Length: 277
Ligand SMILES: CC(C)(COP(=O)(O)OP(=O)(O)OC[C@H]1O[C@@H](n2cnc3c(N)ncnc32)[C@H](O)[C@@H]1OP(=O)(O)O)[C@@H](O)C(=O)NCCC(=O)NCCS
Image 1 (cartoon, rainbow, N blue to C red):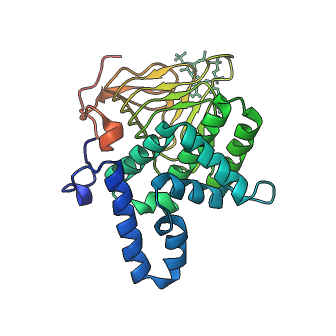
Image 2: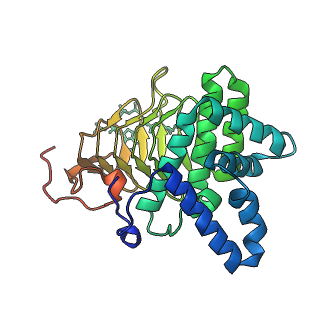
């Protein structure tokens, strides 16, 4: 994964164990420095042997309400993680993606504790597991709870890869038959929706390493190609070629991406070699 965050540019990429160890060191340091947060940091990170134990605890604390308590959510999350270790792997990959791509992220524990895009995505991964294991009603309950809590509304059947980064996340809506591949970055107020004219497979496919910028609407069963960029505020109604930048309403090609994988680098520039449309 390319490191685009200048503050982290000297950091050697960590493996899963190292990421969890690093989070624990960050939490211990923060607990010593800020006593008001010590109890939270112990309960969420330092009291846990493993990352997956901490994650199931954190998600359960967030998801619990008067209808589904913390214990029920913790068991549900822990069950998903035990049965599908790839969800835990993806959660660690996502964590490194946020740390790598978000200049405002200075510690691994930050997204884990506070970033609602990260927490919404991890809860959605549990919802996806429930959906695939014939527990559709609980998956739909979870979708609704994630939406209430984090303002992120993603159908549990949506296929989402790893290393995905939802920056700010407020207002992200992703439909049932959408696909979001590995290393994609999506900013706030993005809709990956249907046109309203199709049924069945009707939602966008966002290919590996693409960047979908703030406020963009990508509508219909169309492809945003590998390493492509969608500019802020665009309405995309047609396929976007790999490594191409589109902008406008309706969106049109405006250039080639300066980067091979803008979703990973978060580079929002493009070459001014305009296409003949
Ligand atoms: C408006 C809509 C239903 C398309 O209606 P339509 O009459 O069938 O229009 P078409 O798809 O045939 O497109 C007609 C023209 O309008 C343009 N157009 C369509 N939707 C547009 C939009 N939202 N903004 C700007 N231009 C739009 C098309 O590019 C096309 O232009 P062209 O003739 O120059 O190529 C659809 O594009 C839309 O916006 N649906 C809303 C979907 C939505 O809100 N989804 C959210 C799901 S969560």
